[in-house]
Length: 383
Image (cartoon, rainbow, N blue to C red):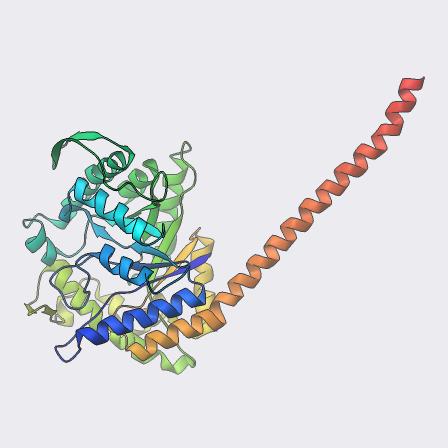
């Protein structure tokens, strides 16, 4: 299992400065790059200060100038906010400017608050249909000249300029929790981004089963990759859990506001709606949050991660952007790099060594068997 991190520029009050948000994100990105994380993901959101990313391609291009190895992904582009030609061109340009490090993640979108301002007020659920028309069109534009006659977009013969640096195109990821979208994504050759949100750990197995079924139903496709994201905080002592849980609860109430469009947003700052208004109140119980989310000491984190690994997750993503104090975000990355990742790296090395030894043993047995058979064959030929 590999590891990635989801980062955003955040402001939760007018006292938080934009320069601090920029500096904090860059600092975290450098730690993740130097620490061996596989991918840094960043979102697309509009008109809200708690996730400042009106164009993630710009953010990723900027980060590519300050990092060396880490892959840079959109998690995610929101399909109804784009047109095929614009998306194909901007993604391909980002792929060039990042040196071929782009991971192309796309979704239907989540916040009804944004849909009312960015997509003419359509229900967020309708974003799935936009995504299913948009992705194949973008892939065709990356290939060459293509004319489109669809439900949401129509255009005469055109192509993407530029074409992507990675050929045939950057890896495509689809964010989903719905079985139909799992099936569609695997069918078009995409990888899967998913999250149990704040649901119990049993939801990880539910999502794992959706992934396995989609893969089994498309034997014509190579097995895609499977990423899962959870809010994450790593701390030294078990008793330090309260800070992470408190910030997660407060952020969840902001999330409910934007998802359901049930609260106010003042100058870009969403209010945290009353606890009584949230959906799935059981998921806001402090003990449940502590257990369900990726909160814990390094040893506790290793135990929790093994549940994801058992469900076929091959990239776990640390969600750090939930108004967690910056110093705790830094500490989380440091502890994860120093005390969690080595556990999985050592186990992977052992597995590779065992596989190599098994292969060498099989080769030796085959050679010995062949050598034993040769004299017998010669003797038989002599008779």
